[in-house]
Length: 339
Ligand code: KG4
Ligand code: ZN
Image 1 (spheres, rainbow, N blue to C red):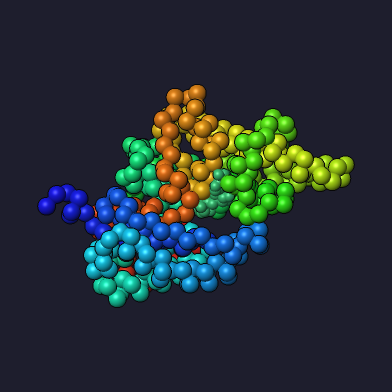
Image 2 (cartoon, rainbow, N blue to C red):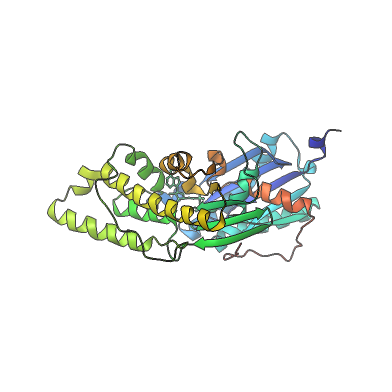
């Protein structure tokens, strides 16, 4: 029997926010990674927790079923069930946690709890077309709910050395795009429109916070004030300058992110830089990291493993499986779980 054959099959479940996802991992390889995005939130301009939980409830069985079928295995082949315990929206997490606990009991398979933020980082270790960083490395995790700088020493040893004191980077993209009248989630749209605009057209202030801290709520307020002032003079200001505003906003957010990464790299003397989370899908952030002048080796996972997905829960679960770190039926969701 070759090495791969002995690797475990892990069913992974992710339901922390507004994506219901299930994956089957075989060792470090993802055999399937099914994600159902909930369109119901679009008209509200952000995730509505109550609607998210209901949609998870509706989606979870078909999503898990599809993940198992696409992987070409049967339920009996599963060696363990990994699930997101937190952080996230409590009602959303409860759906995934309860489902994983029930299935574990029904199939008599061990349960593995996973921290969503650690999983975003460990997505880098999935065996795929991209290269994985060696430990230690720095990871900038930028999503709709979090912005963190993490020194990753091993799959089970991570230090958060900086984080946001208010809004997350993705939240900044989404809230600023909402001010401009764009639909949720605004991050991908700002990315798209910025390509057509001049990023030097407008300048916005950087926050005055600790050297490894982030803050984006002041930026959002200053853009709101700026747009209100301009719209009083010309009611079509946003429409006429949409591309330039998007390019300038995006540049400001990325300048702030990269300034902190640079400082983190200087302090830790680590030059292996990875990015994770939904905002790592941003094309400008990717290209500025890849073309950096600082001698960094940059690691960016495949797009499907950047935004919320169960593959990343599966790889985090795999490392815990190797260490025999299982949990029992008393485990509960933890909306504020920390790294
Ligand atoms: O990791 P993720 O899928 O979910 C959370 O855990 O939050 O991240 C979603 C966030 C949203 O704020 C979305 O606007 C942002 O990632 N995002 C982007 C891009 N694609 C997704 N932000 C900027 N540029 C993008 N291309
Ligand atoms: Zn996430």
